[in-house]
Length: 255
Image 1 (cartoon, rainbow, N blue to C red):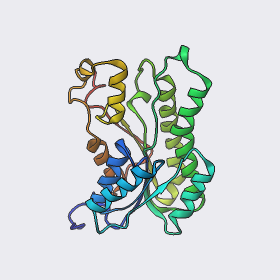
Image 2 (cartoon, rainbow, N blue to C red):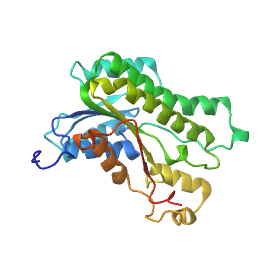
Image 3 (cartoon, rainbow, N blue to C red):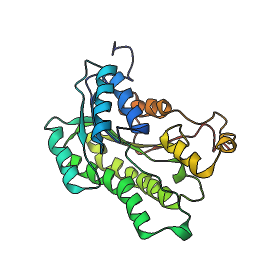
Image 4 (cartoon, rainbow, N blue to C red):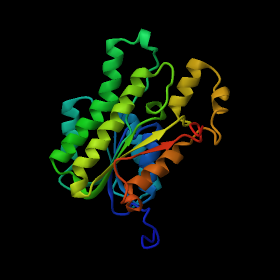
């Protein structure tokens, strides 16, 4: 890639991507590799991690890719990730790992709240804290957090999930203020419905998604739509953007 022709490349960049074994995280990891990054993919499933590494190496064989098994809700696993990253700082971090659990407020349990909170908020923020404490995000680096359109609009049955994504957006605004003195950027992406296994699971629960599809002037998103936006926020093409959230919803919230 001729890097003199575009600021959108990630050539020579070291990028950590969580949730890299499926869905948006996998698509983002692959897009980063294709754009020249050395990708460190994090996930919980050994078999999926092995397949992810094979995919990364096939897509960008010149890259120095690796995968790490970790449950980021566990302090010892986060510490292991920090150790395995090594001394060389990261140029970018994408926090893609997350879960959605459907439950109306009247049926929410304490366990439900704790699980969604620990995975969607505690894990990415505590991993970020550990990275910053060890100065493992390079000056001029970028951190991207995957939020959700559910943080911006009311959606029945996802109150706990929506709350975690709204919390993430608010925390990232503060984080951006704290790291800006080092030239580090922090932003969120808020996608609406994207055609991933999570959408398939939702369709199984609620039935046909065709009526919902009609609310999207541009249709449902593709994983690569979100991955391309993540590449933009990681690259120097977005060097003047921090503390913001890019809503990606196919026109859902135009009116």
